Image (cartoon, rainbow, N blue to C red):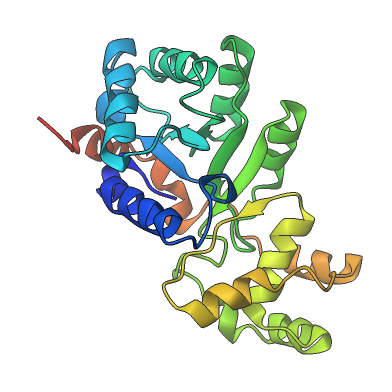
Length: 246
């Protein structure tokens, strides 16, 4: 996963081309996501140019998934640019990010092509069950950023989670990821350590019971702390003020 505002689209593209050139993988075996930053969501033409800039920086012919990074700016006009790029084959799938339920509902009722993905914060401490219901209603696939809590919570110190992990001979991280997967959520945990990446993949050989799922559900704190930042006017103004190019 990359994004225009992360400043790493070129590095991701370089790594992809090197991996393909050395025979490590084919392009079809990779799933690469990028996001359009809010600076380029002011109108259709800026969004179209932003998509082209992302493709050029990465050196890729297409992205497997491309998202609107926030529900900010003129995101309806920006979405039309994504729709056109999708139909042109430059984006294999299109979606949104950080669209809360009421925003997503209005968006899906209005646009021509419904988003295929909504990438939002989803973990036991911010479970967003109502948001998942809205996504299900519109057939939008939920994708979790910060699926392990984003470093703001302490799941690894939770006795209940440790007990469940021990019962399955798994780690707490694997249990938390499995919990989201069983809710129908795609997870994208972040790690730079190979052993952690391999650990995060090893969640397909066990299942949590209904009782275990319910216990983890009970950790939900709702819209508190960092979760409320997207409703904060200062946060919105801050995002709109971040410029990634002239």
